[in-house]
Amino acid sequence: MKLKKTALWLFLSFAVWLPAVPAGQAPAKEIIRAVDSVGITVADMERSVKFYSKALSFEKVSDAKAAGSDYERLLGISGLRMRVVRMRLRDEFIELTEYLTPKGRPIPADSRSNDHWFQHIAIVVSDMDRAYQRLRNYKVEHVSTAPQRIPDWNEAAAGIRAFYFKDPDGHTLEIIYYPPGKGNPRWQNTAGKLFLGIDHTAIAVSNTDKSLGFYRDLLAMKLGGGSLNYGIEQEQLSGVAGARVRINMLRANSGPGIELLDYLNPRDGRPIPSDTRANDLMHWQTRLVTRKAEAAAQSLLAGKSVPAPPGVVALPKATLGFRKAFLVRDPDGHAMQLTEK
Image (cartoon, rainbow, N blue to C red; front, side, top):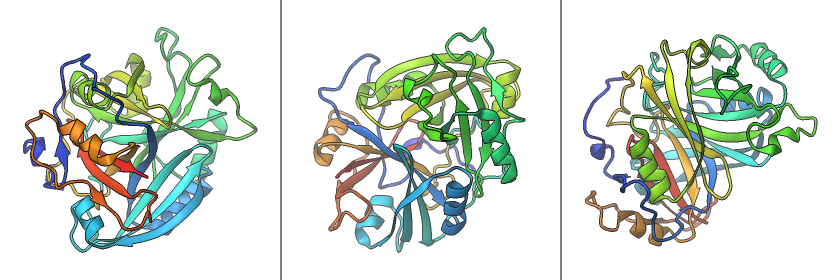
């Protein structure tokens, strides 16, 4: 895949790029009610459903096909036909989308965790050793050398264990274990399960302050804990030599968090290619729920010098669980789909 360094506002004509507002300047009203799900573009739906259900214990809850001019306008792809499978792991959801036509491009083989298209979901486990052995039984491709334990000197994250690996399409995923006193207390209520849910989706960003301007100041998500991770454990977790990562967590009222990964070192992470489309396998989109889509669009665009959006797309049927939606991109080009149910 040819990587272009074109300005991010050229991303896609249907997507809106929004600059950061000054730090600490809160929007007039709440825009985001919840993080509904994390969407992943896949090449072979049957293969992906089998992997997520068998290896990771996700449950398929819906299976739908969609096509037509409304979806073409929403996603910016002419002549699309897609199959969307929604899967649940306890209280959280992912959505797998296979574009039956037109097919997109694979993930670059040389992708790294500090490239700005990097995104993963963090799947919480009750027992890291058992979960890792299960993934080895499924012969997953390692990103991490093995599960890593955050050392005790890192007070914010001490004792957390994590492991990066890849799904059949090459998307990076994470399993994570929270010891008592770390993470959401709900992760200590295992109910005898190995895989407990999705704590967050993590995205690589080029500048934390710009990203906070988008997620905290524009979308009014709540800034939670953070840490600075470095050392051999972080290098072996991420597969990036010399990794030094500033981490911040943002959350809505419900749903998985959005974790910002700002690689302070090395600074050679590549930008998302300007010609990336929703049917390319590197495309992820996080679905956010808003009360009124039109009002959200107006609030986000008010007073900003950005290209005019094509407008909120109204769908005749809630085939995918929403009736109105529009796509917006953060300062690094990560796709956020704002929806009204």
